[in-house]
Length: 126
Image (cartoon, rainbow, N blue to C red; front, side, top):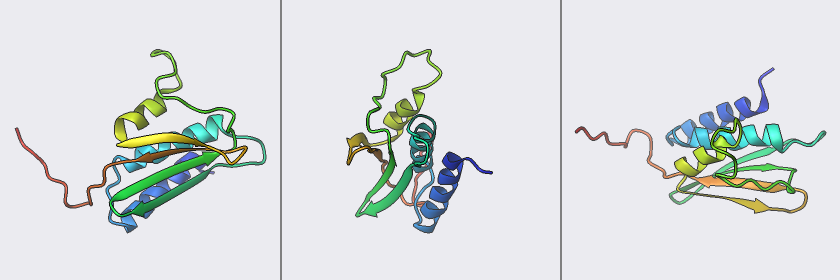
């Protein structure tokens, strides 16, 4: 059985392809919050939700779970900690990101990467 965080990454990648959007960095911006939700945001009998949508030139990735009592903060863990690095990656890859509480008992981690349509990326040589 495929773990939910991997399944969400695969489904998100397929949707991004269908929309003609690049996989990087959005694929990572799905995987990290989904892994956190599956690992830390899980309550027995409840799952997490992944939402992707595009408005104008903005892709918004949202991962909601039912642990609104645990709001994440990037950089809140020690540098040598084994966990907590996912949000540092989100912070590095997203143009904007944040955490929205509620409605109880939920929270949503959202991220917006820069959109460059697949095939229109330029490569600069040095």
